Image (cartoon, rainbow, N blue to C red; front, side, top):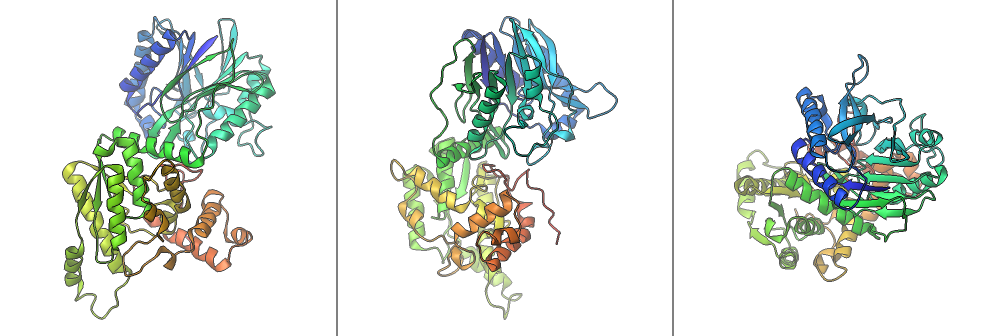
Length: 543
């Protein structure tokens, strides 16, 4: 049998637009000779629909859209479409996370998800009721077992710790299923694709069953879905694979399984870059914008953010704004100008010294007798934030913030200043990896000015300032943050890895005190296992 995996890029809530994507995908699959087409999880609604699922009218319209979609596919191959269905029982959650079998112009059968993730960025127990039934259907002499995303992430032989008591895949195998299909919406994080391939290959090999996995692609708010749909034969060998970070239709022929050419990026920087470009493009596009702007300081963070924006949207749609102060070095201004030429973007220069002087005069009486300090430094950042937001409002450009994960973690950023904006592009990229990205971008010629990469990082808010005046070296800081934020380690465990106790206690204290800033930050693109976004739930007032 030939099965088409429809790797689509839906928009959350766009029922008509998503249905059209599915129609076109099924039409293409039929032309390719597919006998069955499969979408990703909740493809009709877009994943994750979040609290749209609490709106009765939206759920009702989704049901109508599914029926209309079925009728429009009457002369196409059957399709399995990710959707929702109401729970008719008087108890439990109101909805099922479902997969509908569309054939002959009708919704022939509907299957439901069994394992509901409620951790990190997932909150499915808020909306969905799990089913207890096996999801299998006979088609063209084969017994097809259907699973939805989390259903395949509980293999007892692959995972040391399992979240659920049941294993839907093992139960399918025991029921003499011939092929397993998984509809997924699995968000990207660095290194995750390698885990997916190993897990699914191991599962297919153990149960001696072909396994087909179709994943959503595209950015939806902070989540980026990388696609990379794939198919494994009964030996666990990958024999078909979809593109990374772009829509695709993958034809998996169960009668002719041959190993494909690898399509996943070979370097961490390359996969991070692909995710950030896709996430930026889709966030801007799906929010109704075409153009963006950002502040250019001559530093590494704004340079990398600008390069990502150009790759996502084109140089003509990116505006860089230089806002030098009396503390801006000539080198930083020259680096920003060099970046402008390398990227081919438009720039504007607005010196902020006159505005700094106006604030100093207005505050002179209140601040009389006090030494200049953080308040005056932050004023510079807030002046720049106001200027950028004014340009955003005036010209209808989305403002991109340029702070990295290391700074956001410890609060080395100014609320209502450099944190102002609509999307924080690299807010889940540690500083050391920002440099890694910059060097990767320069692999075939200078994109990020070499001087920007080589000079010591500085906020340049006072004379001769360097980040190292306030923070540990980024190599040390980033590893402490990784252990604390991503692995949930406390101070004692981190110190046990050889870090100085005083440094660890200070860093963890900074992380805690910066919580109020992160709660007001712009949405950021999630590219690690734990980002400061929907998966980070920490109290602000705590001890």
